[in-house]
Amino acid sequence: MDIFEYAMQMELDGKAFYLEIASKSNNKGLKSIVEMLANDEQKHYEILKKLKDENPDMRETKVIESAKNIFSEMREKIDEFVKPASNIELFKKAQELEEKSRGYYLEKAKEVDAEYQKEILEKLAEEEKRHYFLLENIIEFVSRPENWLEGAEFNHLDEY
Image (tube, rainbow, N blue to C red):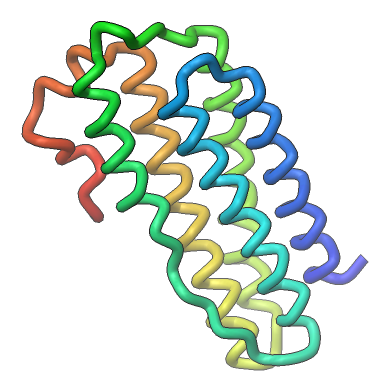
């Protein structure tokens, strides 16, 4: 299996995993964020499919910005928030998958000959890094929403 076929399957597996998490989520806001992550994985799949044959346009997704809005809405309804503690392990598993994907893309970026392929793989690695970061915030929020929201207005999601 070539690197693009493997990466495409990895993205489809990630999408399926996120949809599984979304189906188990009892919180509308978290479900929405996880569905956005699943959509990103689908976009990554489509980019990789094109990458095999041509130079696709790799635009950054806006999942972090959208998540900020959802977290803001969730803050307004903090009393209604139910901790989906059983989902924390799923979010941690998703983080592991994002880190694995990121490592794969960085490793394969060193192996491809075409510069445009290298650039796209590095951009995909950066996207996976952002997903990992977002999942970190979800885990923290789910674990202790009151503490997460006490700090400066959502500084947790600022780009680093």
